[in-house]
Structure formats: structure tokens, C-alpha cells
Amino acid sequence: MFLSQFSRHLLCGVASLGLAGCLMVGPKYHQPKDWAPPHYDLHNGKNQPSPKSTQAGPHGANAAPEDKTQAKASPSSIVTELPMADKWWTSFHDQELTSLEERVAIQNLSFLLATENLAQSRAQMLIAGAERFPNLSATGTYVRSQHSSKQLQEIFKRVGKGVPDLPSQEANFLQASQEASVPLLNQWQDKIDATYEIDLWGRVAYQYRAAKYLMKMSEEERRSILIARQADMARDYLELRGDQTRQRILANSHATVQNLLSLAQSRYKSGLVTELDVDSLKARLHGVEAQQANLDETVAREQNAIALLLGQPPQSLNEELGRTATVPTVPPFVPAGLPSELAHRRPDIREAEDHLREAVAEVGEATADFYPKVTVTADFGFQTLSFRDLGFWNARAWNVGPSISLPIFQGGRLYGQLKLKKAAQRAAAVEYRQTVLQAWNEVDNALQAYHDEQVRREGLSRTVEDQQRALALATSQYKAGLATYLAVLEAQERLQNAQLDLAGSDVAFATDLARLYNALGGGWSDVLPDAEKEKASSSQP
Image 1 (cartoon, helix red, strand yellow):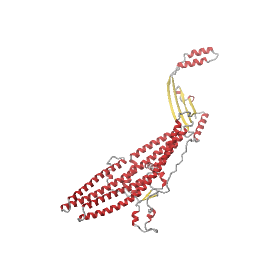
Image 2: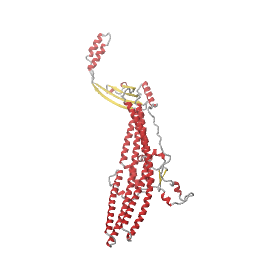
Image 3: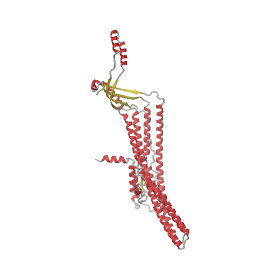
Image 4: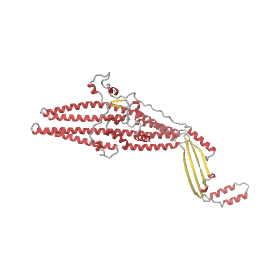
């Protein structure tokens, strides 16, 4: 309202030029093609049952005759392409595991640190986006100054010499100038300044776009940390339950060897066996006790690892985790989703794509630096030598106008910056391809391991059954005096090793499932826990 009509037209024209759309020099982003097979190689075997056929039962219209051998060879858990749930750990139906996984999203220090890093990235995006808008500032100054009287006298002297055909007036003027002096001045000023860069070539837009994708990269990195920590929690918990199962196996083995030792001592007193039998069983008993001590150390270390994942001090969860529990059973059907969904579900792939977008934006920003920069500056305020006159209209002062700066010679700095950004763009494209290929490699390896562990577990289960019968037979023969103690010791040791291997296979089987879900990007793929809480709280009245 304070500017002239010409100035208003100038400002409106410049603003319209800026709002009309910039030319956006530089490259345009093209969505990379996501390679994905039409179907997963699920490694379930040729005769795998489908969820529908299994739910229909064995007595359907087209049901084949029951084959016990084939039933034993068929996998106990089948991977399907049904939609995958985010909270995959609930498929184990273990309340303690579910509780631990939910606490990871609240208490894990790595995730909390990533949350703060994300907050910093969001603040940097706000800073970069501020250049899209005019910069307004208000200032008020007071200056008490004493200017040079000698300088004023010299000015009067030179001005007086320029007066034509007035010798008497010139003499009087020159004489008066020798006595002129500048008084002590008080200068009051208040004004509003405005600065706005017209983004003709998209430099500011590219800068904001790069900051936005850097922020999105922080979001995906935070999501990756959460998924990785939850996978670590599942692995540590499953290994803990497996080692606790091994503890019970060794406790049972200890009791079995103790009973055999009591029997051998009784037979030694009766003169039926030699002292060698007793000493051999004692050595076997001490070996089991050594294994127990080693396993106790492993269990304590795993409990501390779980506490660390929850940001708790060592031994703080020993009572909670020390409860008797077995390794959780894997579900009969594992939904893995469609192959085309992997690129949108894995945060590392999305982070690599955001990195590529950010690199393209930086190339555009470096390209725009070669073009002129147009900036409009304006200020309006009041200036006076007396504070009482500061608010009067005739004390107003203003200026407005555009400025253009064009880089002419930079010593190759702009050219080198552009080459650097283009090389970074090519590197980001290669990194994206590498990330996608690595993701598919992890998925295929996880599917293969999950299938092979089932076959191994089936063989170990049959081995345990055979060794149990062998130990019972050897013990019966030893009591009847038909076999030596060596046969019993060997049978007991083989049974113990088979049981330990089977317990390890149970852990590996469940851990392979957690690894598979981690490779598929499962766990908070759409909304993170804190965002989920914010959404729920905002929906409440």
C-alpha cells in the first residue's frame, strides 16, 4: 500500500513470473524398472499341498490314497504367495516373543537414535524449503553520529567556486563555508526488508527436492533399523529357547548317566563288573557337567543380548526369560506375498531409489548454477533525525528492484561440481541395481535354507527315535549281563548328540523363518509404530 503504482506492477510482474513455473533445467527422473520373477521359487517340492487342498481335507472327491512315506517326506511348513502380514512374529503364537518384539519398537536405543536422526533430516528439509518463499525481516536502528566538519567545509568551498558571474556572492559563500560545522546527529530508522529469488531455472526447487529425498532416505534407514533389530530379537529369543531346551536335554542325560553310574557301582560291589565300568561312567558324567556349564554361559549371554536390544542393563530380564519354554512352532503355511511387492516392501530398496532421486535433483541444482540468478529486493520504512518525526508520512523511505547475477568465470568450479553430481547419479543407479539384486539373492537363499532345514529336521527326528530304541535295548542287555557298559555309553552319547542336533535344527528352522521374513521386508512395511500411534490418537475425538 506504500509503494507507487509502478513498483506494485513491477513486484506483481516479477512474482507472476516466478509463480508461472520455472524452466527446470537439468535431467528428469525416470522410474527404474524393478526386475521381479513372475513367481517365487518356493522350494516346497513337487508334491507340495496347497492351503486350499489342505483345508478341504483328505476325503475330497479327487483325494489320492494316503501314502505314509510321502506324508513323512512332505514339508511341514509351506511358503505361499498369499498376502504377508507386517507383524510376522505373531505367527509363532508365542506371547513372550510378541511382547519382546513390541517393546523393541519402543525401547531399542538404535531405533531411538535413528528417530532423532530422522528429526534432524526433517529440520534440514524445512531449512532447504525456506528459500522457496520471500525472506521478510523488520529492523529498527538508532545511531548517534558526528560527521566531519572539515569535509563539509571542503564541499562548500568546491560548490561555491562553481557559482557563475557572482563574485560577491562567491566571496561571501566561501567565507561562510570556513565557519560551517556539522552538529551531533541522532538518526532513527525502522523498516521492513524483503528478498525473494525468482526460481527461473529450478535451482531452489531442486535443492528442496534433494533435501526431501534425503529425509525420505532417513525414514527408510530408520525402518531398516527397526526391521533388523526385530529380526535380531527373534533370532536371539529362538536361540535362547533352543539352548534352554538343550539344558533340559543335558539335565535328562545327566540323570540317565547318574542312574547308570549307580547301577554300575551296585554291580561293582557285587563283583559283576570291574572298576573300569564305574570310572568310565564317572568320566561320562563329568563330561556332561562340563557341557552344562558351557551351555549355562551361552544362555546368560543370550539373555543379556535380549536385554541390550531393549535398552536394559544385563541380567534385568533373567527372571522373565528364565521361565520354562520350548522353541516356538513354525506355522504350517507361510505367506510371502507376491514377488512384485518386494521392491515396495523392503526399505533398503526404497532407500536406494530415494538416493537415486536425490542424486538426480542435485544434478539439476548443479546445472541451474550455470544460469543467471534473479533476486528481487525491497524495503520500506521511516527515517528521521528526530524520534518525534519517526511516524510522519513524509519521513518514509523505500526502494525496490531486481538484481541479476551471472557467473562468468569460476575457474572450473561449476563444471567440476556438475561432473561430480553426474558421477554421483550414475553411482546411485548402480547402487540401486546392486541393492535389488542383493535383495533377491537374500530371498532365494532364505527360501532354500527354509526348505533344506525341514528335510534335515525330518532326518534328525527319525534319528532320535532310533537312538532312543537303541539306548533302551542296550540298557536292558546291560542289566541282564548280555552287553558291556561300552554299548550303553555309546548308545547314551549318540542319543544325547542326536537330541542336541534336533534341538539345534528346531532353532534353525524357526530362525530361518525369521530370516525369510526379514529378507522379504516384513515388519512395519507401511506405517511405523509411532506413526501408527499418532494416527490412532488423531482419530479419537
